[in-house]
Length: 157
Image (cartoon, rainbow, N blue to C red; front, side, top):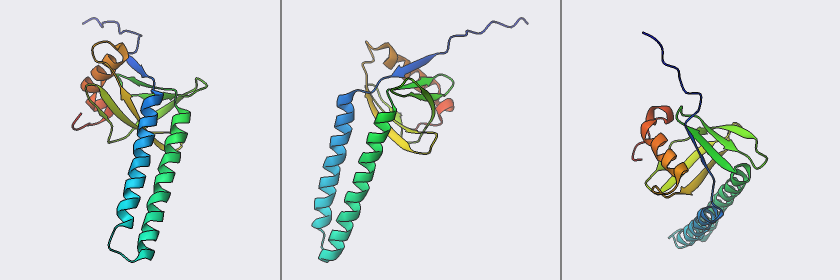
């Protein structure tokens, strides 16, 4: 049987983060830090334990915010293709291979993608798209839906 030629074009989507969504995620992190601190300080524990726990909570939140800022500075865009490859495009245009992590989810209008850089650092990005008018978003939906084996079993998405 003759072999059919394969297309040389790769089916992929390029997602560009929105600054307002990055700010929203950062503000949610700040709100969680403040709320958690208030909850810890209101616990029925000795004052020294409440201060220690609140300090640990604030320290962890500061670390997470720094991680978000570093990841955001490294990514100008994310590229996903139908073969299950994901790459980050840096501000200088350099392409870096990434690993998609569990906890990533793609819904009709929102996507939360968790990635790991080659150096082991992790980052998450919130994307919003219009399934009716955005071709890149439509490609993401199609890739996500039909390439579960390429990206691993993404339950609930």
